[in-house]
Length: 349
Image 1 (tube, rainbow, N blue to C red):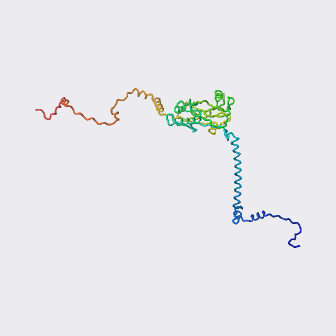
Image 2: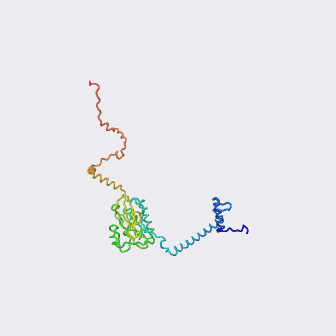
Image 3: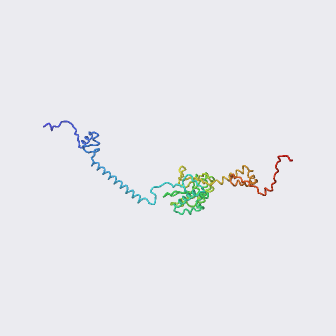
């Protein structure tokens, strides 16, 4: 038997090698520069330009198909399942806002038209946006057509912001009220109860004795669709101290409207006002009263002493006038005059 076909005796193991494994070994033995860019075979990271084009088009087609499927089902969900008249994303309870402004302190002069007119215009614009004939509804607080800012009875409006789909849960009887409500709210519930209402209380302890009058009352008429004047109430401030900052804090009371004292507008809202009035006449009267109190003898002295005689020089503003020329005596006056005797210089003979 020829030697080239002879098989050694004994146990042996045949290792099967494929073409794939040989290719892997060849790539493993390549230097790192050849693995990134092989200029001989025109490969980048082991792929040719055509290979990179094929794999890019494949994944673009795949992800485009996935996005089309997602958009299709989202559109079906939004258009066919969710009611278009309902909100797609539910919000929390409604907040509060103040008109004519949400500034910390609103200051104006009652006797200056350029201060009063812009405030009244802002209120009219705010009420006209309600589309509920709100100006006539609150006409009782607008007797001077300037919402009281010219007659020292300013009116502010507190609006309960609109949240679609919000259904208020109200306190309908005094027994339902929580323990932390201020004193007097139970009497208000007894007086205005009978229909679901969101109640409002205002703390005017820092308002210097200011009287608060609510229009139409200290409440919002609660319903599933609160629109127009149902979301607004007016507060008129009477007996405001002039030229002083006053602050009022108002809170709304409903089961599903929490009150957060740290954030403005979440269940409570604070506003400040400063009514500036002209004080020139007042200061003159106070000075006269002070003079009368300190020196009571001054006033009688002014009454008993007659005014000084009229001096022509005073009427002329104190100017120095030239002296009038001396008039020569008339001939008759010269005849009446007796000649004086001449003094004697020689003794008589």
